[in-house]
Image (cartoon, rainbow, N blue to C red; front, top):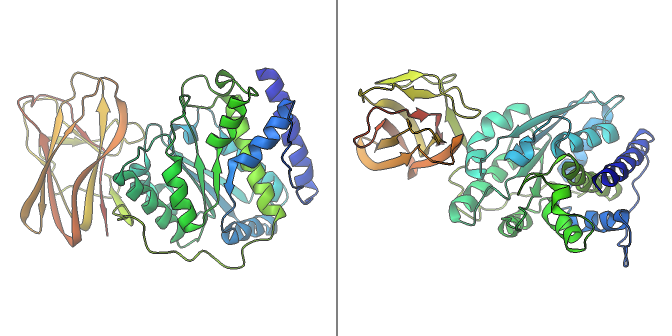
Length: 404
């Protein structure tokens, strides 16, 4: 079955490329009432996957830039589903290639790809990463994917909306597209994410809905889509890319929105908006204490590590901001201990937080801890030490973040 799927998808992608070369207008798909073949079900799944085209003003502008030969930058931010296991097989690269071939000038070298997916991370870290991992690339198009990494809580509502607002308010004015995944047992946080997407009139693609339709109708087995409980395999990524290609085709076929999105008032607190990350490359701590430069957290080597001995002098950060966060790793290594953060705001001790860096299922993936949230900007002093009796332990601070 996998071989058949691959052959069919290759044929579909070839047709798309041929159309792209001739710059032909895409043909509208119609729902097949009594599907019998895999292609029939895929046709219907594409239609189902397109939650809404939303406001396409910015996306139409990005397409025009690509077609005219101007540089057009596409950024993908999310978790491991976006990061992928291989450059050419992940959905992000496949869908980028489709856009590049369909809309790029000549050989498409003016369309550029940036993958900012990091395994095991939710939108709380995604929002803190915006400045370094999205804005830095002057994006024209941004895909946001965190549907299986976020839970249903106010903190994630806040962070996800913060990331959206940061993208929409970015100087390069990118089109923002939301992508929703699901796990084998069906979990996805797409329902509340769809509400936010509707509020901002954003394009939304639910591969969760598309593959659920195929799974429920026996056109696809989960084992054909994924080799584990979450991540699409090569064939699964091809299916996801097909859903995105269909979205691009529909936007190309339909008239664009006449005016840009008007950014409304925030639905939630948006306490992750306008964040800045402090790492060694951009910041020197007030005091290194018993810590040394460099860290080994997944994707984060530019932090600080406590020396493995009994010394416990604090690592001290000072900065001016409103809300403050720490990025730290969790590890299954028994040498890891517990991080304590004492937070001073405008000279007053306002909070003490404990973060356990030992986790039997940890693999040094970055986690976000809240240090303090203030009503207005002020002067911070944050002191990091080992907590409790286990002073001879490994500890890492991968980054500290704050908002304006």
